[in-house]
Image 1: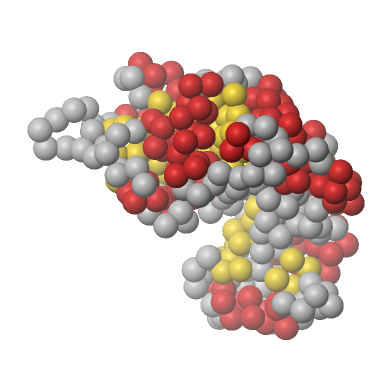
Image 2: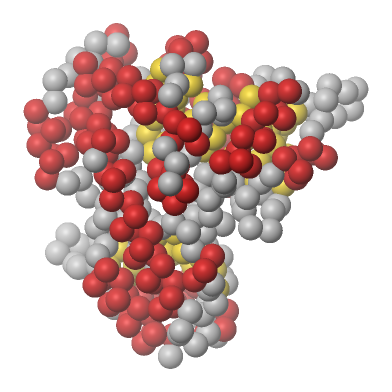
Length: 347
């Protein structure tokens, strides 16, 4: 993509550019060798992330996928199953790492709205048996990406954790966009995530940092996780230049997420009025939209190509469905312009 080309980019909230404050913090960051645990900026980010989530310790990782797979490895042994929602990121978008790295297979459960509940999980639980792979971990996702940014309520998370812990199972939360869920529910993340054993959350999605995610949990788990991070090639050196914008993301960018939710609702309401596009604006909770373009007579990939020719970027999930994601680099006015383009290219 040409640097000079102007686009309204609704592909993902990963496309955001670091703010001027982030760039300044990167230039001025105090650094050291993080493998020796001597980078003061990384150390502060890990400490602050743990504080915000009410956990003992944090671990700075290059990507959310690495954080998720370190957590799976921490909580399982080879030959076990990981129960997760059928459209979950850890199953569908992380290159089978739970098998490749942790030696586990998924036990996917399809839910109607993307919210996995204990009533869904209980029948799929496998104890130690002569023929079945035993359940090793429960993995949940909040917000649920491919289900359209849907939020898992606190009481649902708590019940899963309580019942799992009663069975001696750990619960890992893929909280890539957990701050979006917290804003939607009006609950601080430490309360929302109090009972889960580990949480991964992304700094480089809705919070706008250029790189990085966090894994938080017990000190013992994070100490072990640091070794798995090294094995995966994630041992970073003077990483304070990346942690510095992460601190700004954590402290400041969480405060503006409601704007993205409002813009997503605006998009959904406008899209619902375009002939051939199916979306329920009332179901849009956070910053992700999933819309069905079947009624236009075009595939999502054809719509995507036509949008790009008019300087709007949005990706197809499959031939029928498209995803749009709002973020701080997309204004309300740009959302209105994108709607006009969508109406024109599907007419």
